[in-house]
Image 1 (cartoon, rainbow, N blue to C red):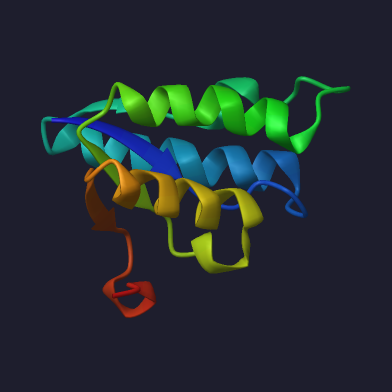
Image 2: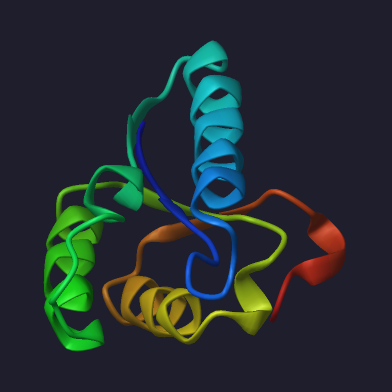
Length: 102
């Protein structure tokens, strides 16, 4: 399955944020998935939130599922990606089931 990783970036140390995405990417690849992640666009200074969301939604479009990192609830972008994924009936996977939103 093609899986997009969604999680908090803004407000975190850039290295910590990237580590969160890399760890999830490795876990998902180990399970046999093909992975897309916003970690590659984290350092494009000068772009607005909506610019990033345009790119992230395009990544969600080509994936079968969205994998929500456990810190998704405190991320404006992740909440938006979750809503978008549900709107397009993508499967939602959770890093931590206790953060799952019904």
